Image: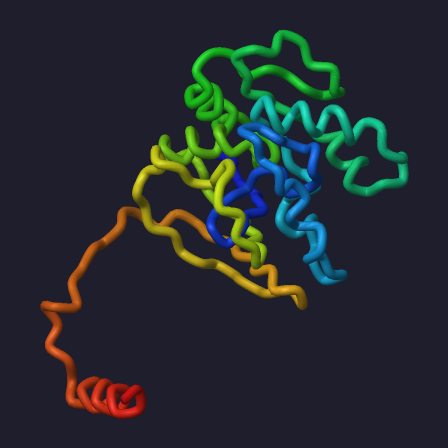
Length: 222
């Protein structure tokens, strides 16, 4: 069973819409496109997080596919990201598209959850989702995502398309690795970790050490 990996740029408040430029996705009157631009440094490796699709097959939603199709095939041949994305096999989830013009692209037919389950069962490289917020939310609710590569940028956007919406399935995640860029972008990798396990601090009797710590904090505050 091959893995399904999500890679996404998000703001601190969880918005992932139009990270690359003002015209990328103005849906819903979004006016802050390009919000990642001023936060890049030389240490931020998009290949390590799968954003270039290297050695993976892409699974894309319609909107992300159209953005990529209009840009990447027309970049210079020596652009390494364009080279890997153009060469990658692409599976596109859409209810409206009937033809795909980007090479190595095929439509996912029927129910997208069933189609992705079938893809995961096939032999081949891992599957990579880039952007595609609506698709991510559908597949997260179906417990089909095996890894999240989330780049959190130090901006608050207020409104726009979010990584996780109201239909998200409550679930726990385990942090595998995290690092910060010189510009404050936090690059994190999470994997699913079962159900949320609620508890209550009210039912835990504090130790003498904890009581002393609280007393010290209270005295410092006042």
